[in-house]
Amino acid sequence: MTGISIRAATAAVVAVLAAATVAVTAAHAETVTTASAIGGQITRTEVLARATDWYNRRHDADLTYDWDAKAWDVGRTRQYRRDCSGYVGMAWHLGSDPNTDGLDSPTLTVPIPRADLRPGDLLNDRVNDDGGRYPYHAILFGGWENAAKTTFWYYSFGSTPIDKVTGASFGQATLSGHPTSQYQALRYRKIVDDQVSGTASIYGVLADGRLTYTAVDAADGTRTHGAVTSGASLGFVPKAMATLNFNTLLVTSPSGQLYRVDVITNNTSLAFNAPVLLGGGWTHDLLAYDGRGSLYGIAAGTLRRYAVPVHKPAAGDITSDGVIDSGFTLKTLTATGPDWLLGTTSGGELLSYKIRGAGDWTRYELKSSTWQVFTDLVSPGGGVYFGHNAEGALYRYLDDDPFDGSGADLRGLDAVDAQGWSQVLLSAQPATVA
Image (cartoon, rainbow, N blue to C red):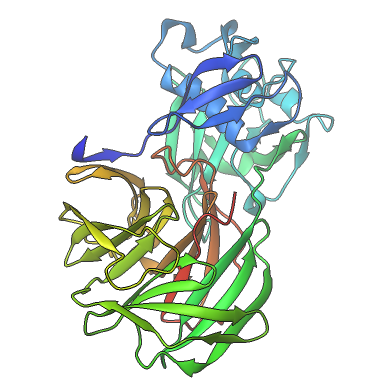
């Protein structure tokens, strides 16, 4: 597909690959999620994938709202009731069929503060205020839509078809037609967080040209050490920076020269050799290295790709792969995987790109607003993103599938720091988090 914008759609679970796996597909067919057993532990990613399957099939005749009828789940492992609580039970892969009252059982769920809601949790209204057959309504929490947790999205099977509601807030009078005040936040006892592991190695540049290094545990957001600051300055403040590996940076000067910077140590002190000039004409506003030999740069809205064949490139080693396309007016840029880019716009969009070649790329809108606050966006891989704002805060996000073209599974985690990150430029070593 050539330069065509595709608005993010939630990943669809389309086939059972084996008794223990289901495939979650959208833009990246290789993504496979290990399936839970009926009534067993289940990850948040799988909960949303199962819920998304029914949502994507919401117009099928066997998924009309009917509390006396049932429908198969994605793997045809079990049939579930076609109503709000049945939908939640299906998403959680339960071995029973509780109604909304049963979803509140202490053996099944535990109450949580609304601010602690995470993807796959439940908002449950037990107040039977309309004379219905069961106390209801139950809606499945999809995720927060901003770091401030003021808006969120959810799935609701309260009528035909199943509904996906975005832009919801606890300040509004009703959610899915029921009083917001009546909903209780609940967490399924057997839901488990998707695990990430690894260290994010984040390099930075201060306003005086000195370098910094900070190591952050991607799983919990704690700084394992840093920031360590160099005693010497580069002699200029780079316009753009990309991290090739743990000890090698690429930076551009304001005059358009590309330098390699070899870092000697970044434990208790940070030192580097004199920058090595690689060439001129590098007027890029943004750089990002994908960890697999491709360096991307944007200058005046034009995206170019370069081949980096060695860990320590010399002059002439980095060769152009040509222009990908124009129109890339991004404020930030990072790589999330081989030939996958992530960036934000000054208007607040969070965009993901799959790059295949010249004029051959696909654009996905993960979020439509609020991301303009970040001056830097970096990713060490594994669906972990760090956003740095002008006030010096560093926020951490987890995208359960960074290659599905959807922001539905993207959620904000705890901030690494609320202040103190005074760098004017940040870059993370790619592919260090899984």
